[in-house]
Length: 225
Image (cartoon, rainbow, N blue to C red; front, side, top):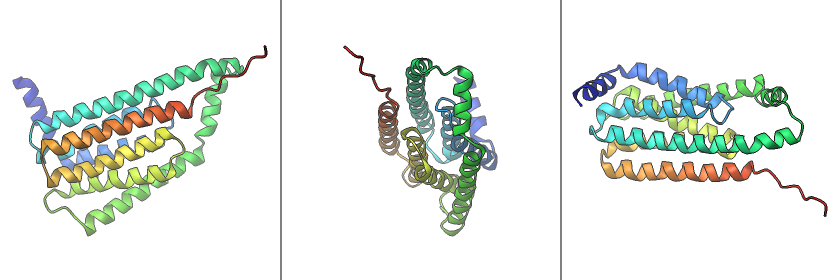
C-alpha cells in the first residue's frame, strides 16, 4: 500500500506542463487515427492524463474513481470495435476482398488530405483553447489545468462537427464531457459530481456502441427459394 501511495504521489507531482504536452499529443492522435480499435488507446491515455492534470486539486479518492470510469469507457468502446471488425470480416471474404485489398481500401479512406484536415482541426482547437484560457482563466486552478480543460472542450466539439460515424461522434462527445467535467470538478470537488459525470460517460459509451453496431450492421441477402 505504501509503495502504491508513493507511486501515486510521484505521478501527481509531475509538472503540469509536461502532462499538458502529453494530453495534446494523445488527443491529437485520437483525432488523427481512423482505426476504431487503435483510437481507444490514445483516448484512454487522454483520460488518464486529464485526471492526473487535475489530480492535485482533487480529494485523493476521487482520482482512482475517475481512472476506473475511464478504463470502463475505453473497454466498452474497444469491445464494440472488436465486435464490429469480427462481423465485417466474413462479409469481406464473401465479397472476395483479400486482407491486402482491405488494407488498401482503408488506407484510401484515410487519405493524406483527410489526415491533414483532422490535424488542422486539432491545431484550430488548440488556438481557440489558448484564446479562451487567456480571456477567461479559472482563478482557482493553474493555467495549465485551465488550458487542458478548454482544449478538451474545443477539440471534442470540433470532432463532433467533423465526425462521419457514430464512433467518431462518441469520441468527440466524450472528450467534450471530459473537459466540462474537469472544469466542474474544480468548482465542486465532490463524489456526487464524479458519480454523475461517470454515469454520463458510461451512457454515452453504451449508446455509441449500440449505434456503431447498428451503423455497421451487415445486411442479410435474400436467398432464392
